[in-house]
Length: 186
Ligand SMILES: [Zn+2]
Image (cartoon, rainbow, N blue to C red; front, side, top):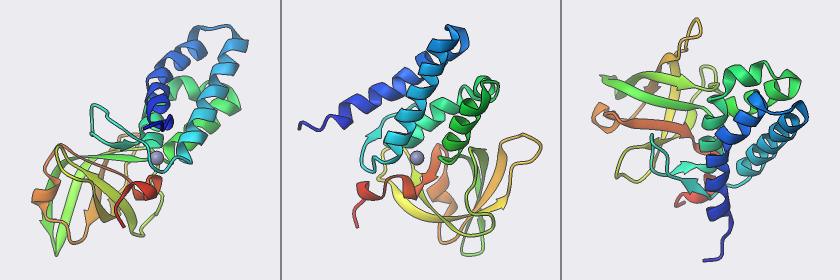
């Protein structure tokens, strides 16, 4: 295969902490360049619907979500880095991630309690999500935000119709399905 995106982009994910370090410690001009590179990388990754990378929390994460997660690792720094830092953080937060900590049966589906990173897109409406578990193929589920995070804590609850609690046993992680539409079987 000569698909370079599959090789270059995981390197971009790895480079995020380095670029954040340049923003934090570097000359202001170097910091501005690093912010621009982060912005470009996230925009480019968001348009890449097929590349996936392995992370400590899931085996095949859409490249944009893996990158956004790393960008959120510098949230405090970026929030203090002017308009461009704030915009980058807002873009990254569109690539939400939900880590399931506990699941219980509810009606014909399940309630999943866990931690939400980023910004939930749908209010009370149903959102298409990818469900990732170790050693399992990614499955597509519908999720509704049942209890949003409050007071700056990530704790939240999702309602997942037609999903059994067993299918959500940790470690289970959800990502936006819209991030990698080309990577799934139709
Ligand atoms: Zn994404």
